[in-house]
Image 1 (cartoon, one colour):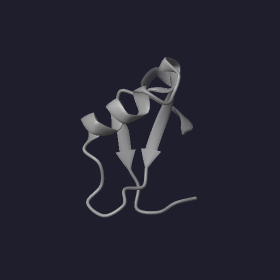
Image 2 (tube, helix red, strand yellow):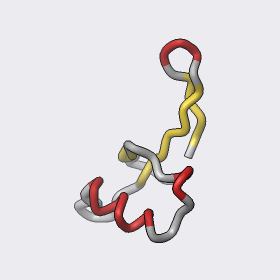
Image 3 (cartoon, helix red, strand yellow):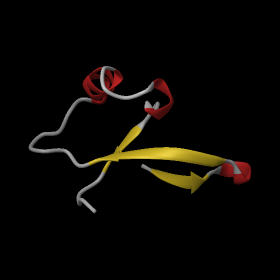
Image 4 (tube, one colour):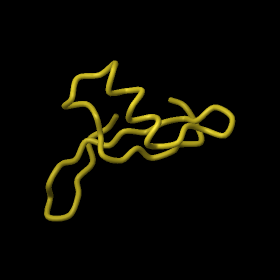
Length: 53
């Protein structure tokens, strides 16, 4: 997760995921994470990344 500045200077928390194989379906990822993360960390959108940090 990183903070990015969006339109109008508003900060947004962006979640990135490095998919293994075909990668998770975004809806499945949200359901999986909902049982493991607090609600404030559940992002409405997750962006795929091709590399890990």
